[in-house]
Length: 95
Image (cartoon, rainbow, N blue to C red; front, side):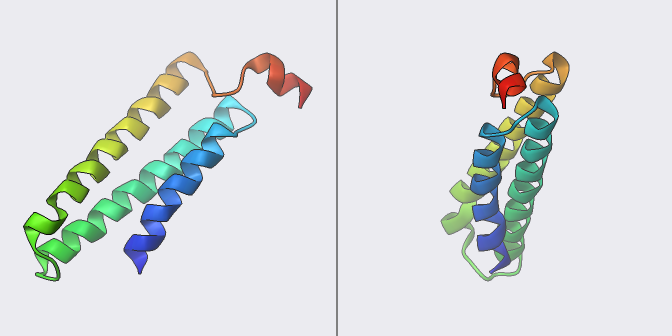
């Protein structure tokens, strides 16, 4: 159950980041998505390591979770370096 919550939270928080109102809000929501993605990877590893699922059934999911985590980290760091968000600053001022 926790795996499903964490995994679906990644998508919800990423969508929320794309609709953020500021660069800081964007980075914060990406950070939450990053944490949830890492948690999803943890639960996949836990299930695999405790014999709850076969390794070959979850290896691709684990690789994808780790790749998504890396992309979220990179996006957040790039945004922090450049002070960028998905919304142009001119639009933010009009909100």
